[in-house]
Image (tube, one colour):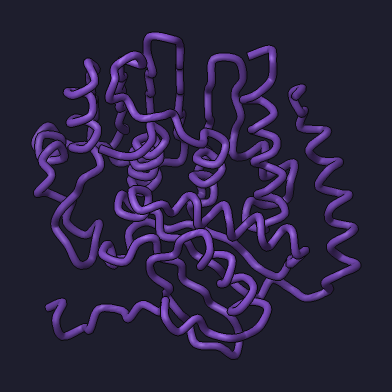
Length: 129
Length: 176
């Protein structure tokens, strides 16, 4: 493989953007946040992250922003992925392996259905005091 | 021990971003004998006392995590360095920044695989914040700001895939 230049990267982006704009005129109204503290890293957050961006890209979904964050305090359930989507509850999924990451895109983001078995409760405020 | 060397890099570089740095340089050198990583930031730095505590796994900087007081980042690197004929050096000046250097013996039987370098670097660049991250490799270097400039943002999946492709092309180029 030869090295890509930044100019080549700009061109690739423009081409992709044109194709995207045709398919999806919506704004960026969904956020996917992958936990990447020491706990997330050790549990395989990278695989979850890669699967999410590759699945979104393959499906041409452009209304999603993908971000990472540090430890969310749910180290026991890493990798964790938070999904913030309009008209849906904000959900943190736990134990997100590659298959679950794919389901997050296909079921939650596209199908607007929660993946019940992977929903992670936030720690109750009263036990954290 | 982490599963890959990239996991140590991700962990430590994330600390720099969380320390409020606006300028971070991550340097990765690999040769058949050695893996060496330097992470230099202009974040808030640490006092000698805090630095000593940062190497203690049963300490985490107050306020960094809401719900726990344990921090494993640097202690895990120290443990790996001890086990892999390596070393960890941390220099820090409060208000100026921190420089972390660690190296592992690449030929040590227990040295974990390198891992996904492009995925790790792009992943780090998606951590929120107004900072620039320069990744310096033996045969190329890439800055977060230049990728943002070329792609518009590093938040859309399509851009992240392209950024990863870009970095993979640098990493797998025969010129390396």
